[in-house]
Length: 303
Image (cartoon, rainbow, N blue to C red; front, side):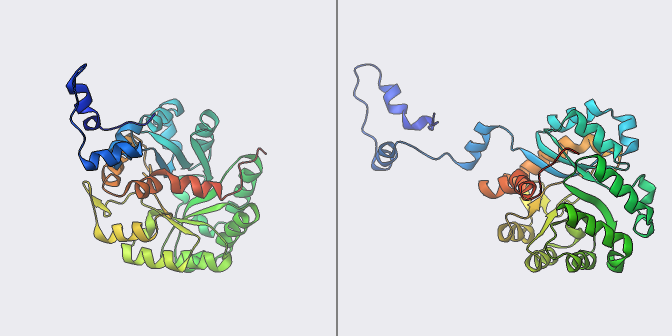
């Protein structure tokens, strides 16, 4: 059933039984004759409830699950209104704990790190490859990452193996990298789908240049606030969102246990600045882009 603004039927209600209602003016007559009125974007959102969020950058590592048990962590995600939560962890056991309880919500991504202290060493540790192969044989994933790699390290043997594993299985690569490392990964596999974590912490003009250069590159805005101050969207970022409406995703980045309590606040703030964008663009960034990216990847198949 369509919902009409109250002013459309006010004269009929106010006139009372047997009274003659004043004729609508020409503008109102055209609306009534059409039989429908598209509500304003703000009204649409109010009727539909809070804007759903696809959070593309969450971690549930060993120190998090020790302090925030899986049911509590999932409750925080649902209370925040998350439609999907892309989760990777150090170690991967955290991701599996959440996915086992909420496969409707959690999107599992395999992080190379067996513990957080491997962030700076993994890219030179060949044993990582065997670890990834073992996990890929046992569990379900849509991607590999989020991993940290910079510059020429992206052409090292371990990183090349990661790219090859993703290529063989059609997986997303979630890369915390500088622009050079992203480009080196595309050189190895031009058809890769890469989600550039934190949009490389680059300014919007440089991010836009990378998006123009690589048609299969997406960016997440995790742990960034420069794109919006309060509800005001930065002009440079607004231009980027308009030019690339289908390649920007949101993310919270729960890299420490304390960040889990920020998921709801981050979702609220994201909805605030998204509300200043055209409704279709806001929905794309909030959740539709994430859903579309998942749809382009191979389905999760039970091992």
